[in-house]
Image (tube, rainbow, N blue to C red; front, side, top):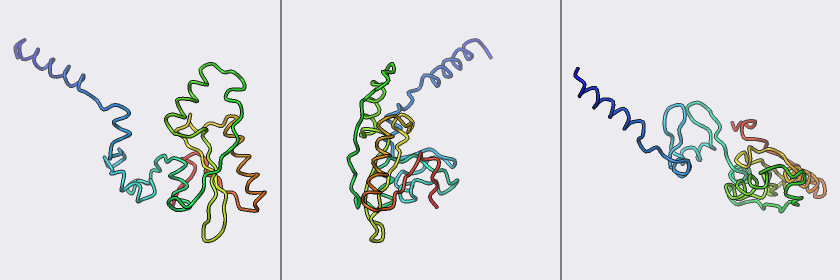
Length: 171
């Protein structure tokens, strides 16, 4: 092989490396999700309650999606929870992270509380959104959780709480 062919092959390898890759937004807005058997259509996943039909992997879902599955599509009411001080300990760049998470998820904090009926029984439920700073509990999340429990006690309803997405398995 002469030096000219070697140079062309090297150029092809460099072009493959610098090929345009999809951005994070492109991946999130795609109709396809990657799993064990290759790409899976999002509609199929939604019909299967966000569980891969091949391997049983549970995909992350938001609080709204969780409540839609639990209560039924739009058959619940989101309760407004109290919001404490943004950053009581004044951590560096924490306010920026909170603002970015709010913009990304559309939620005030990682925990949402809702009320609805299942088989005629009024239920108070809470859920954690992992996309909101990893679902970590701060002052706002703790206040929301306590509010949900107190609301259930005051209204004599059962309280159901859905923790981070990997702890729950839908069968």
